[in-house]
Image (cartoon, rainbow, N blue to C red; front, side, top):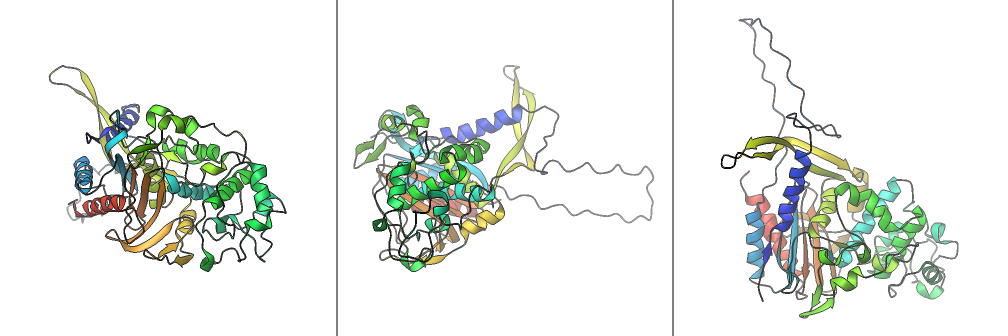
Length: 455
């Protein structure tokens, strides 16, 4: 099989920045709507110089830390890790200093037909749960939901656990301690309401009890639909408006909103487990509850666009984009005028998508989960937390697996660095940390490169 490696995603990122920069007036400076534009010009010096005047030296502000990875670093890391693993396709994107930095890909989106790129859309499985959690925090900020209210406030008085004094809330669903049984995923508002009203659907435990933790995909069907009931709209519609449009990201919980040519086939054991055509041929829900079965793992995105959401978390709720200045130069060979974009030092467009308090809430450990075969982790609001992992003092992360996809997102809130890796057609090899080994090994190489490069 031909092994391919793509830089298209990184080129598209660069092209987007160039187009944005060059569409601005060529005044020699750019302004931001966040107060991070150019510093005011210094006052003019006096025309009279006093001989005995003592010169003052103004301290220079510290420069913003800059990303260190290069495209060559990404390519070399992919080549290095794929010497030890097999897969149909691998795609990766990185976050440095709280900003999207590099991206790359290896292999095929469709075997022997279409190359994988960092912008290829892939159903990323359980990392979808992180997206739901971000929407939950945003809805709480917007006054649409009380994360600590019983879900019966939104589902009706019959949606209660008859075996407990306390009742499940959106927050308990985000820690997998809601007390709902992990039933088969399903959709449909009346069907879901009937399940919540049935005694047989509940466990005999107090919601929020970490000792009764039970990972629940079905719980995400309920959580996502609770968000829809609270906001009186489809969760995917809210996601588009609240996060994806400001980020310039194209993704969806609903495959039918994407085009076949931008989505990867999913491979398992060498065969197609779900084709891009089948995925994008799904019907698009129009009513609350119709998309519930997509919430646990159906989010379809690219490594680049998922890394944008990771950047928001890594940067305490703010999405930062480098600002550029556009100047025209003459091509010495053709005489044509060429627009050249150069970064404006320490100047960024900043878009706040979550409050710092919401991100801190998501990152707060609630209890420790001890698994039989893997290292323990701290359960946060959907996010997991481990220390001394992949060469980092601390990482927040989530894994995903379905239909032959193995995915991993991680970030370090102290360095504001992060990595997203999505694979298709790989083997299910797990390391001792409970992370997919191919993804983790690639991340460890990249984290090391982020720190080892001279500034």
